[in-house]
View 1 (tube, rainbow, N blue to C red):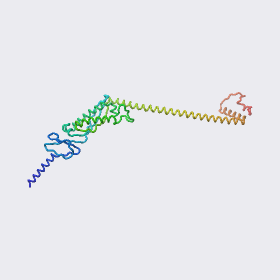
View 2: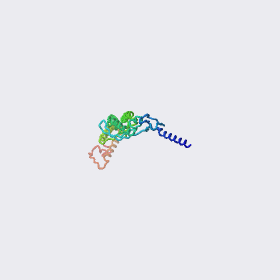
View 3: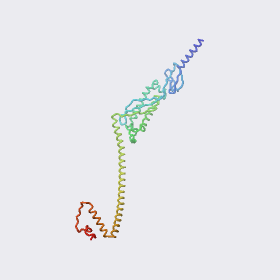
View 4: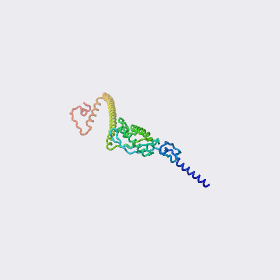
Length: 309
């Protein structure tokens, strides 16, 4: 019994040893390749339980998750020979494990990042070299005006098209040479060297001043229209008021003349006496007034004779 038990234990141990050296698990985040004497005999092994012959065969696992490569700031030259400090990042993942293993000499992710970084850097350098400073900074074409309320522009437009072309170019090389798929390439920041900043700000200031001059010109034109309309309305209103006043004044004078004539016709002597009293009151209303007349003047006829003779 003891011998049989020992044999069973030995067999179980050997089976466990065989299983541990021959079976391997690839989880859902990974892919793997199988090698025999260092030569790849199977690639892109799907997630699950797999086996290989101990000693004769081996396997390598690769993480298929997204990798972010944050590159250092690089200086690029625009089509106007202006320098820009560009900070970008790349997101990639393994697409073909066989190509990736062959290109990197054993699946070294650091080496893949170095090679990919140089490809991205070259593509960005060429893309920025075909664009002007304004197109790169504002994301707008040279003949496009800046949008209202936005000095720098937006991430849309020329910059998005530029990054799409860079992504397509890099992806063609990365998939065929490295076996990796570049998911996204983005520019985090674009800084201007000190010698370029003044020129950019000068151009931005010029654009803003041009817009401001347009607003001022339009405002001046509208002000002149409003002023002219107000002057015209004022002139018409004054003319109408003057005409109405003259009309009323004429009617009042005519009515006064009619009343005077009617009163005068009823008693001419009394009317003459009343008018003389009014003249005396007006002439002597203020103290200190002096009036020099001849004694026999018509003005004193009612003072000399109550009948005015």
